[in-house]
Image 1: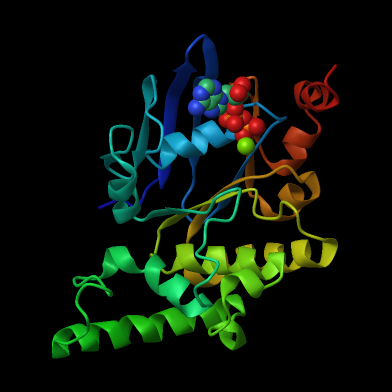
Image 2 (image 1 turned 180 degrees about the horizontal axis):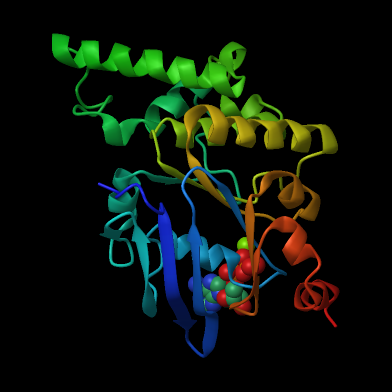
Length: 256
Ligand code: ADP
Ligand code: MG
């Protein structure tokens, strides 16, 4: 179990692909109960970093500690089981299934019986299923999806689909939530709603959040702390105000 100190401690992480260093000795820590943003121009290494954290890519060197546990050698399902949930830059939901089913699938790692394979014939399995269902409905309610539970995800507006994705990650009862560009493709109103929701997740559920984001306004509104990457290197780390005023950050964003 995590030690209650830092949910995440990233030390000197390097990722090399054939001939290309996507991350170059990146270090920073996510403090418990905070929203931490990782920003940077296209190709800076943000998605690579998320893939390392969630076990999709293996770091070439360096360490990522989640509480007392070293994450770098673990496969994705083990990382998820420790309480690190993520959303994807491109929506990864079952479009033909109703919202409720998508959320129940998100809960899968917490169940003893697979919802599908058990057939729900056994009384304990049925009890377990209704217990999970109740919690899933509670989460849907929190995220503002209570009246969409029966709707196939593919029929929902894009902004609402992104909420379903967030809700599905919450259904894993994570301690750390990784959000990859949570407002990408959204209109202004949807962006504000999502920002509010992310703040509510931190404040009401006490979940630490690490987000990759392009939208500077969003980062300024949401983040307690910001790490800036450029060409795989950490070029700044501080409060939103500090990094916004940093000459190196300004240069990276202007491409000068
Ligand atoms: P960002 O998300 O900040 O835009 P990425 O992490 O996607 O940046 O990419 C960082 C660099 O690593 C880019 O140059 C990209 O082309 C490269 N890259 C990412 N994934 C792979 C991969 N699987 N194989 C080879 N190169 C990759
Ligand atoms: Mg990316």
